[in-house]
Image (cartoon, rainbow, N blue to C red):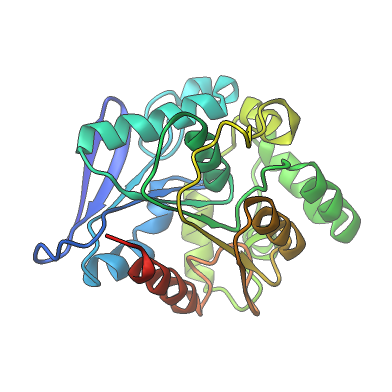
Length: 268
């Protein structure tokens, strides 16, 4: 059953298994323009059914969390504080799973705190966003302009959303629902991810990592996911025929199964 609470101004969704299986708890960290809601329909119930207590926060300025009025001034360091605040309040030692910007937040988290293990899903690479931005500008200039328009707080449409996030067919009703929930992102956080606050590899804790990308990801292309894997000396897993929103592609269970196998391989 999905539950929601507010922890010091932060919206936190929880989905717990029917019985205590003793399996590792999971904390999901969402990407830009989104909120904790992006995990609640697919990944959270899936992993809770497999016995993992699941939690997902909405970073400050996102979803049902506070500080929307300060969104453009919020930093990646603020988002790292949010993750730590939720972990402390829930008194859990979770595996961290970060998607897109959330993966970058998780990497910055490792500069300051240890973690049991982390999964970087279509994550902004440790080298930052600039290569991804230039790639998008060259490959899909209209989509690049549309995304910058969203950053400025302007409205978009479901066609743009589909082109940005999905490789295969996407349910129109789901796209419309996402469009109603998505929002502008912090300009400061975007600059942090571009060049001003990149992960310090020498300060990072290095827990077990799972690095996953999508073959047809327009926002974080597969070659950048491969670069992330090379940086951390980890295998790279590229999901064929999928786009950036691996949580909601029609074949999202393939992504979940990959994560589930990795979780099972971790030492207790």
